[in-house]
Image (cartoon, rainbow, N blue to C red; front, side, top):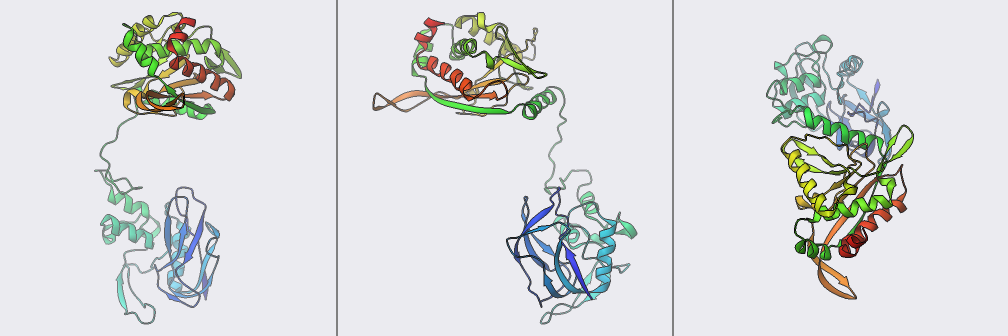
Length: 399
């Protein structure tokens, strides 16, 4: 009597696999647990073992084709006790990956199975029914299945039983097989950060645009100005740009775009307890020197964990160049609708008037909510700030 083996559950919600190649042919005699096909899922390429021993009578599918979970894979003239046990375990279910075939009905698991012609006969010691993948997992974890108590019907050993035995208390991760060094509860500021960033990714259809900028004149200006750093000068250019492109100084509120009259400028700050964004209230009313002093004050307070006057920002400036990186597609600080990032300033070759000369270059990167504006508005704002960086004296004179 022939039995057909269907493609088993390959785990993590996967419903299909691509047949890479057959490892057997029609007419081959195979043993239980013998790999019969190599399939590729979205996760990995795996070999699928047969739950039956016997002669292969049909292969279902061609290499390169897709096989659905539960669809026929191979048909063999099966060892009937093994086939019955396979169906018993399949009905019971083990609640995990590739479980439910390659089983024995022997109570104490000792049986003799003949290998294909030309191989020697071996005696296999098997505990109460378990699949070949369960046995493989146990070997990888260094476990003796005879010492385990199965949680399935009639003591059936499942993959979950093996994983529990492999990671009792010290903490092995059942998915990777690696030890768990530490579990860190996501609480306090870390939980708040995770909530805000997750909400931003979930709700905001964001887009990113960037430009390389010659910041040589800005570096020279910083050196000649006492009491105003580059971040303060950038902040001044940002608030001026938002006055011209108010769509980016806004939030989305129940189907409406709310634009603000004034700018509370958030400054992304890496504090000991995590990423925080203290804001400078009414940054649009401040000079570059006033911005410098206020930015230093709120950043210092945030890093010390004491922000006495919490201010909700309307736009965020992120100086990730201080971490030694050139660019980043940052996550918008919800419910704001845009964030401007600044990379590190480095001397690089640049073409000026047809000549390659060394200049101080940086990259500006704007991430914006596509609901509030289109690319032209975002590019206009970014270009405004970039032009101000390249010609800071002229820009400051006009502000």
